[in-house]
Image 1 (cartoon, rainbow, N blue to C red):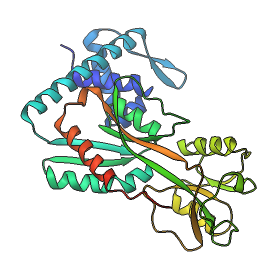
Image 2 (image 1 turned 90 degrees about the horizontal axis):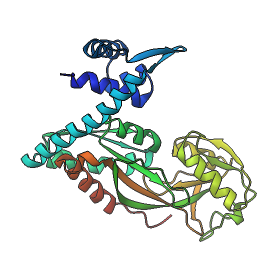
Image 3 (image 1 turned 180 degrees about the vertical axis):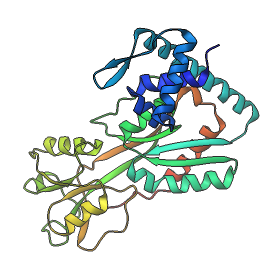
Image 4 (image 1 turned 135 degrees about the vertical axis):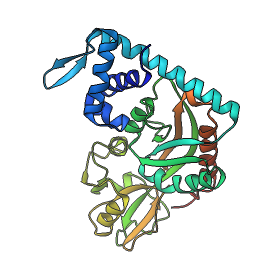
Length: 304
């Protein structure tokens, strides 16, 4: 009989594309991955990996077995979920991935509620960009992914995942206090067409949205400064180095030297949660999604 953990290892190599990626996903060493694969090769009597440049790739047999392993692992998760549902126990471990402002604005009250209500459940947070969250979710490295997108630029959600809306977040423009428009009740992108902009690094999902939004507003790309942290973006705004568009979710106190003004029309992003279909009936998953919705309902996103 084939060993389930060795099949899990092969599947991780297939989905991550490398032995190193599989080791990171499974939280083991690369040598442990290689040992598991060698034992699996001996079990079936065929080669599963072959050299490709400096790395390796799966053989045809490896691809075939990895495909079967993926289906088998889904069935195992379904069995485990059904058993947990039968017991009704909110227990075990649960990993939630979330992008930065959701991690700051939603996850602390959610995780606090889970700890208070379900002491047998060990829940943890990892902060990840949405695309990485989805990858780790599909690999079963995380159980729930809190992600974002925009109506104009929807996030591609692969088959096998379920979703539920969490909230709709509004974004405002941040301006230096001495800016001529800083005290306006609202501003438009056309009002800001000559501004330099502070945005996100090019490998983050928000960067593409910002560039597209400015372009739709007739503003050619003028993102002069980039930073992942909103606190850094706002420090650049306060120094008079540009304007920024900042979400309300997870926003801290307005720093000295910065004024927020509503944009018209107001940019809105959709925040939603994803999980694997096979874990839909898992009590821990249901409890976490309920706590997430409650945390969203308590968010005050009503003003700039």
